[in-house]
Length: 145
Image (cartoon, rainbow, N blue to C red; front, top):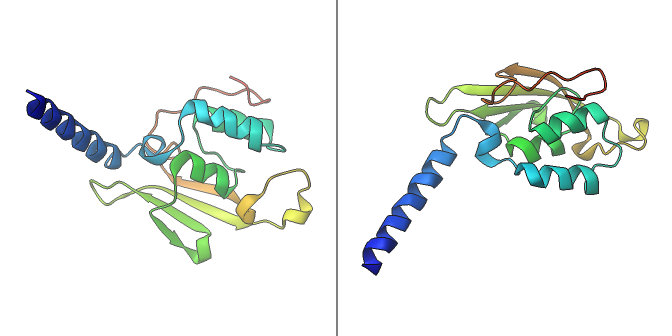
């Protein structure tokens, strides 16, 4: 009986790992959990624009974010080009690009009080802007729902 139970648990773990890795939804692939996002914004997010905070807390990438925020949401890119200024996230099942991100280098000394980790700002999102997730709720001018 114990062997059967162990076999079932092992099989279900393998299935869940395989389906997670093959998910085209980037936030589920390797992003931090929703309850952990709040910690990162409150504890480590000093100086983040309020609009960017709202998108980050909701689990969405938007123009203006730095590489650190995107990496926390979607994980590292599957491919990098142009010296790290172009990131691509690939659908493992089809091999097609889900989302391509374009970055510009930032001089951190010109942005006082803002955490420009990796000194780049997201300027363009090509492909699926939501990484396979449903569109975000509408935000008002203050970045609020």
